[in-house]
Image (cartoon, rainbow, N blue to C red; front, side):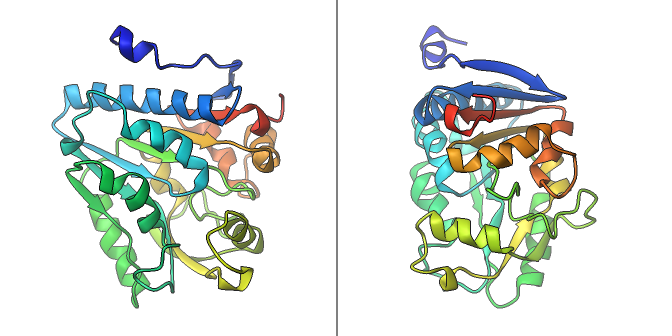
Length: 263
């Protein structure tokens, strides 16, 4: 790595492992986001030096903004060889609804970079057909990296505790959102009322996410502390879907001090 790249890397307050999971805690959201972006950029450069193209799945949530803002500005990444996906989408919103996750990613990263391709989930009026279409796109080649978060109920993507399945036979499926998840969507500020939050969505399943070569999980905020505690120290069950991250061979969890239950 060049000296200029290395200079961008904040130093974690705590660097530890929980089973197979690497956990890095930083002083605040900005340092957490910068560290995650630096690591993701390094991984992209290394993979692009070895392969013709790279395929990346992005989460869409305010928690990801500190990382995405910095990743967009990282130097020496040939984005024209990167294909992007996203991991979940509401069912029932108008095509131009600003709350759609595809539009969030368009605003924050997809439209800002000269990506090789962007594959957006568009449930339309036929979500089951869209699940099959998106599954086929995902399976055209291996997924290199996933950039994800953890919900306040411990979900990854829209795999909420009531429906998460660590052995799910599907890659993309229609799901019912639980009450905690819907409350989080309202609390994040995207909807004018809780009733306006859709009750169903399409999501990549847990096994589909875990098949990626490397996972970068970015989780800031005190409101996520209980979910992080469950992910790190709770029983490895779908009661906290993020607990399965401890089993991935190459996953790093980036926290700010507020999100770390041990801070």
